[in-house]
Length: 87
Image (cartoon, rainbow, N blue to C red; front, side, top):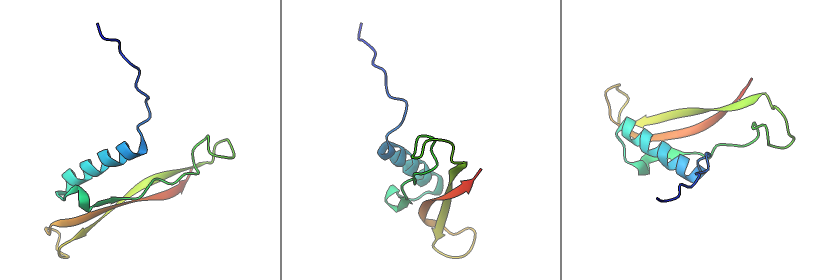
């Protein structure tokens, strides 16, 4: 019987970004090359210096560009940014 290995729970940033790009590409019907995700900033995590609660977090902001201004126009690109929110 093969021995099971424990997999680290935290997803590497690179893999997390790729999964997010794939989901957004599927949601908006664009190729993954047209999904642009900024790296998530640091500074609000408990273990960031100085240690302790920073009373903030980052929320994902998704914006799209379309081929024309009408609502039924096709999405051509997706952009993901992060906005700092105070708790």
